[in-house]
Length: 429
Image (cartoon, rainbow, N blue to C red; front, side):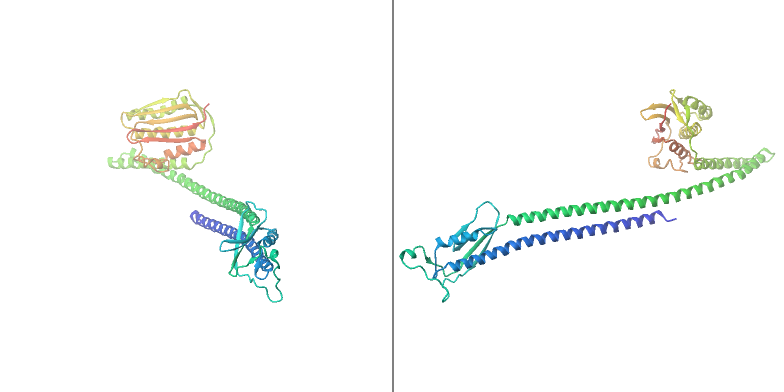
């Protein structure tokens, strides 16, 4: 049989390994999706930037082609820029020097988001030999033509980045949906894994529980057999001691024989208590009148209580219950005997049957020594007792009887003020 602590440690270790692997796999997939998203964003940005540089090259070439012997005409240059501004994604083109605009053109100005790119360049104003065009001749033809600056000019192009932002938003949405889908998939995988792990754990726990039950049953059978075989020789010992005490023997021998009889009786009570606790009996339910039950119990214990100077009162209140009468009688007898042991001369023990919201309740209350708070969690455990000569099986047997019926055993006590033990949740009739 595998120890429970070992199997639990192994199961816990395997569970953490499985969770760690799932978490690592999820983080890997999430990192892959995120990396793909940033690559897409960089690609969109690079595509926009490359188109802007192409437009700057075209703008530089257009300005250079427009020059006539080192002169330019803004009235003729701006229409050229206007045609260039009609290119896709282009919003504005301009040629400036020291903040002064030489030529500028826009296409459909709107509130669209733009990215602006600049280039500082020197445009050769002198046409190469054999390739330049002559400037217009005549006074009217020279109007509007001005020398083109020889220092570097700034070429500017503004690109519409609405599509870039839309692509970036689409990529972000794709990333979010991918991560969400991945998270759901891994969540379902985790739930399935956990469900299978718990199922395996439950199966293993069930197997261990069955092994423990079988082991306990075997021990109980062995113990019951041992107890039964022990009672027979004890009976013979008691009979021999009884015979010796009745013979004409010295007083010291008779006293020793009496001690043997008392010790045998005490041992038999222990054995009987063990047998009652080990015997797993299914209750046979009948209608039980608590008045008749209390009358029978009173006839057993009232004489002993009177000798101890303890008053026992029985209050049935006409309550009837559904129970195994023999088991209920045994449980109440144990509770009353415990109450008598805890009480002193002049004490009071009250046995009450009453109805409440949860059915019927039978309580045994005394004003005796009470139970120490640190002892309360242990009083139902077998062989735990604070009484001199007690077997420690009384409350354990009562608890077993209550559990077999589906009742609750409630214990409330205060040191030096008494104890109240009640069987609750009994089905009334």
